[in-house]
Image (cartoon, helix red, strand yellow):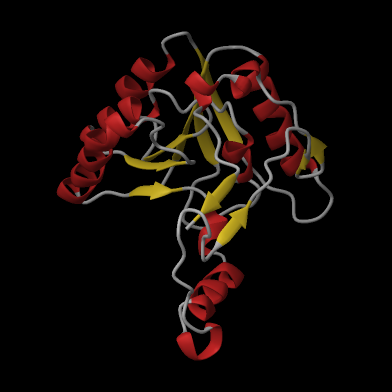
Amino acid sequence: MRLIVLDPGHFHATLLQKDMYPEIAPRVAVYAPLGTELLDYLFRVSLFNSRAENPTKWELDIHCSSQSFDELLRDRAGDIVVFTGRNRGKIDRMLPALAAGLHVIADKPWIISSGDMPKLEQALDLAEKNGIAAYDIMTERYEVTSEIQRALVNTPEVFGEPVKGTAENPGVFASSIHHVMKGVAGVPLRRPSWFFDIVELGAPTYNCRR
């Protein structure tokens, strides 16, 4: 199978290519406008290809256009479309890709407004109807230590029974930090301007109570 990367505005697209996969062809079609986000993606992939230990062998077929998504659907240069980055309107691009019979993998969140929940349901229904995948790209959720942690928390003999809380005194309080500045795969991360626009990215949730 062959990957198609659309507008790789987030490093999640690059991390997908940190390793090679026997089921995936080394040649990847990339559709994006020419700009800093595309250049950053290309730079990171080149580092994976040139590293001393276990280098990757990706070949990139790059299409630079302001109409990148329309060209992607027209060309059908692969089987799996990768959606990362800009979250507003992400589901509106995923739907035509699924309708065209393409597998879709996308980073979170797929939607940033509760009003788009019907579109999310439609996307999952399309995938089931067409026998294709619509999958969450955030692989750490399925990493073995996360799976073990989930199993332990849901085993009363190990974890016990959760305390039933209230809004004023929650039984569980979780806190998460999303760093603006950090390194990814050994390279400092540069956030694009839209990362700070909640209309484009969605409003982050830093604390969760239950």
